[in-house]
Length: 140
Ligand code: CMP
Image (cartoon, rainbow, N blue to C red; front, side):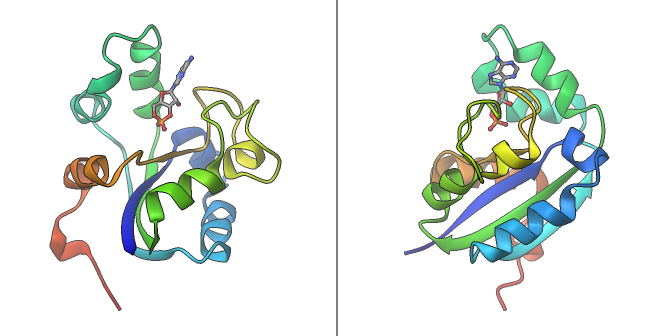
């Protein structure tokens, strides 16, 4: 069934000019772009977005990184989009991600791993609401 997922191209990848290459890769994998924006995520937003990781040792580092420069945030659609997107991005740690995955090709490590992908449809809906409204979605 057709499903949506949220991709965030993270600050290091945006700064390094990798946005186009990452989007090419996503389109080659037959995802449809429904909405896209470049934005500097506010600290308060990042803290809420990543609240689930609040007790982890890397939380402060993660918030600092995600607010260190603009991100490109994309709503994607495909059959089983959540699972299929996680497959093409690879392991959270870029150093361990399989060859040819987005995190392997464009990321560096656990923190600077090029992209975020929603881990469930339920979380997609929560994440979507941080950055978009339904009026931003173009279904054609
Ligand atoms: P993301 O998919 O955005 O969701 C949670 C993020 O936590 C994850 O990608 C990683 O970038 C980040 N993360 C996980 N482990 C570590 C770590 N050891 N150090 C820094 N960041 C981490």
